[in-house]
Image (cartoon, rainbow, N blue to C red; front, side, top):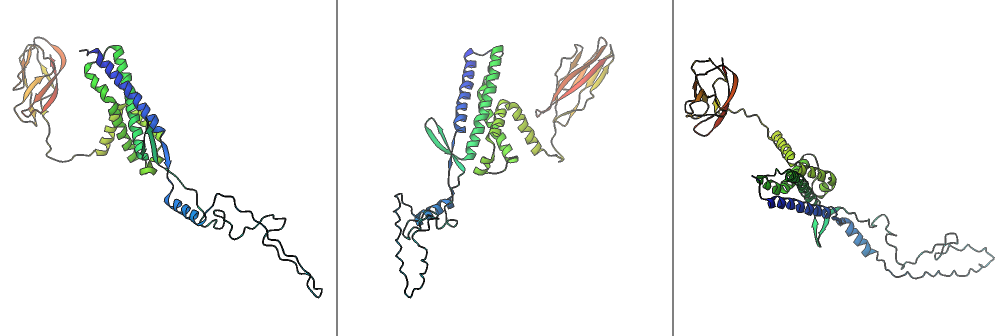
Length: 343
């Protein structure tokens, strides 16, 4: 039965708005700015150096060279001794003046190589996410997980929109399928998150901020989008992984089993002569009830309580296959294929 027209348009609008909203969230999350945090040891040493070697912003006082005293000739015509080199200024060749003892020392000048402050190192351990005027801090792992969830939901929205438009265009959309389209975005997001956990736990090393920073966000986001686009295939792949991990051989004895049909699978009835065959079952709890799943010939009848097939064929007939179902008193069932040839 075709459903009311407004429901299909409600599903279409829901998928369209959900996809646009997820696009905005992904864009804002991708543009989250990292906040650099200097290492504690570097900050302490830098502060200690500033306390021991204060530097003022005012211009340093001009250095006035000390004039050299005039040299007098020694008595007894002794040759004059050469004057010692001046400590106030260097020779004209060097041109550099030595600052007095009370002059301010440049930062790191005297202690260079020992307690000189190192440039602060930073790592994106925190991301600032801003959306519609609201800002919040995100750990790298949380940012990556949100990217995976939003991208998986976006892929599911795209897949749902394509399927919905195709069925609407072909006028084959049924009312019973509407909940599927409403559930598709959260299903895609959840499957993408589970897929990320499987991949991260099995193939990617590292944890915390260092582990998240080592993961390529483009790669995991692409996988999440594909999981959302092909959620049914992704679900089957997760099922395959689970069966591979938890596969085990059960060699225990005394296990409970279902109903088994022990009757022969073929039979031959002579033309014009009475035919009778009893269907039998085991491994269940009697009494059994029998049911023909395919129509029987007009001449052949089945007793549902005893399982007896009886009748007289009026003419020869080629081999034909019939299906039966047996049910025991506890509700366990089994199906049985039987081939009959009239000669």
